[in-house]
Image (spheres, one colour):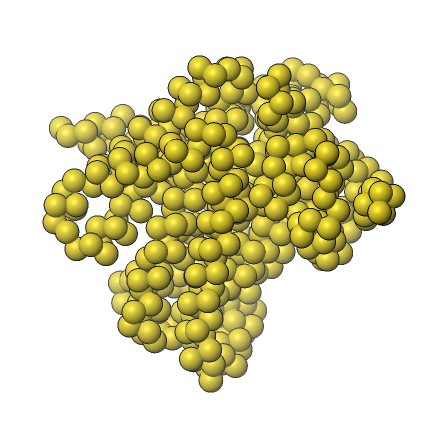
Length: 478
């Protein structure tokens, strides 16, 4: 038995049991509905209604804040709000934006795109809520750094607001433990595995194909050089990397869309009609809705609380301002980048009932290449950068979850970072299907305590929002 088989056999039974809980499906109106997706969508609907469509009303204010208009360098925090946003985006803008959208369209047709966009808008409200709470209850460490995220607002918020300190601590530890294990999978090994596959494909080297660990070693060194300096070092990289990779991908996609501009009217018609078709693929209209929402929540992570860990380090004296900034994440990740992917596919190679054996990133690559033969190269570069940026962001998420459990110290900080880099090499060199499935289930499992705590602390979010006067401090000083 080789290493791959040993690890897969060891975690396989646990994975199947956990997946049966997290991704349990019930039949509604002829379609299978994963309860975790239902849980996340209900959260988006609740906070959109409870906060009076803050995702729409607050959009202009979010732009003003992230542009630095109200910035005060004396505000508490480690990094600017723009850098906090790019760090969070580096963890969500990834392979899912390229492969996940293609999977949604191949399963649900163009109509899934409409519901993917709707889910993105709802996710903006959820991100606003969780990141506002993260700054309200963030912790200042002795060295001047900050720690925050769901584990902190679950513990401190439920103790202060509901007088449930024990429940808060239990939920906080559960969240942190699942996040530590989950980050080593989808945030680490899966990303290094995909990045290595991209390099092998571009290089066409048999030696690299049989020694993918060498690619993992290079990625581990690069990641280690970035994360060793903490959130400031990570943010200094993501503030350059995220805009660059997003622009590279979006511009390439726009060129292809413009070349096929004559097909846009038909594409928009297909998206609209497919979104409300009473009959069709995947169980009709409800099936298409589920597919679109599922890919969206898998892409932007709204409700999982991961981005709140990065946003808790932002420089601001008013927690709600970071909620506004965070709400831009699902808009950029899902509404903009995922929609670009969808339009490229629909205006190029999509045909009703298509089933040519391609799915995920292969389908997206074929769509790009069908118009511009050289476009798979920038697509591959963007995919590699997406994977690398996700690794460095999730290193920070995992570290903060780990130190929540063990306490802040240089030893635990260094130990986690070293282990994280070693797992990058492992992920690039072996095939770990069961481990990927296990970490995927663990990461989505954290949505249960996270949203539960957010519901219980909803009055705190509402109070922060109602007490906010746009630009009040800025105007007073100006």
